[in-house]
Image 1 (cartoon, rainbow, N blue to C red):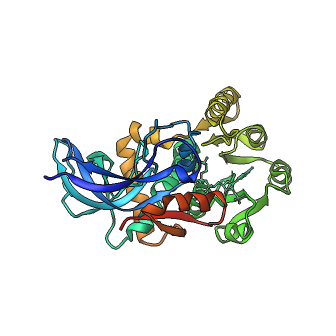
Image 2 (image 1 turned 120 degrees about the vertical axis):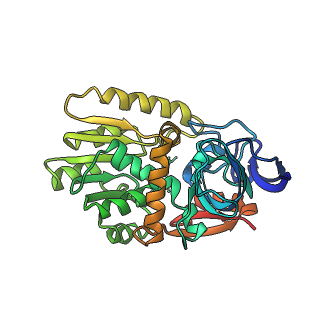
Length: 341
Ligand SMILES: NC(=O)c1ccc[n+]([C@@H]2O[C@H](COP(=O)([O-])OP(=O)(O)OC[C@H]3O[C@@H](n4cnc5c(N)ncnc54)[C@H](OP(=O)(O)O)[C@@H]3O)[C@@H](O)[C@H]2O)c1
């Protein structure tokens, strides 16, 4: 096996989208239990923007390569006792990473993290699935413990995770309310069967109290602050508030997140309602079998059209900075995907 020379995006110092630099690197042969993967496409999430600014709880030290999700093709691998039987050079795979590193032409990954792509699934589409849909499954199943037919509130239902929750929620027959503000949200949410609440004009607590006087079974929150208390108050007995992010003050995001997480833990002392924190990179590491089963199921759903992640824009890898800038200007509706040459 020879070293591979390739390009990747590196954050040398925290800052705006201009800090994303294209760097040449060399990938040595993979250690036992690892594969080298030629990345075809990498999904871009809001989390990447936070990490680039140095404002992310699971922050990597500089220099680092952003991105949590890829689809690509196995170049080669070094076997160990747990090498899956389906693995071969050339096979297409997807993965959610536990440490950011996806904006890259090639990547070395542990074999347990790879899931084969279903036949015919476009790798660009596949790269838009892992983080948003694994997070949605974490919210709905792991923490929400929702069956079918409950009523839920999805904060930020127009965002990447929010859309994934709405898509899966519809398939499960959930009755859904969603907050959003961007233009076209009302129609987009309606197409997923979600009742739209404009969080800039309406108080979601008032709306839900009026429309669902018995309360809702779950609230999924990525904002924190007073949203948490308001969301908690509209829960039905036995309901759960699942928190998966906190929109803190710029430069203080990490301390605000820690404070928010403590608040969520304290609220969990309530006798008749629950709270939970979802942190998908940790959940992947903690349950590799569950991770592979979950990713396989959502990729299968994408292949047969049960879910259809909306790609809002694709950028070549070397234009990752433009992709971040466009997302920050809120110009793009749908998922952004980086494609490799
Ligand atoms: N815990 C985990 O493991 C995990 C995994 C993935 C992502 N995350 C985190 O989850 C958050 C969302 O990620 P994402 O990729 O879905 O981001 P995104 O695509 O940028 O979506 C965020 C959405 O939030 C909405 N929003 C903004 N302010 C709001 C407010 N005050 N009330 C309600 N909604 C509001 C926006 O809606 P409008 O534009 O319509 O206003 C936007 O669509 C990020 O903080 C990310 O880091 C956590």
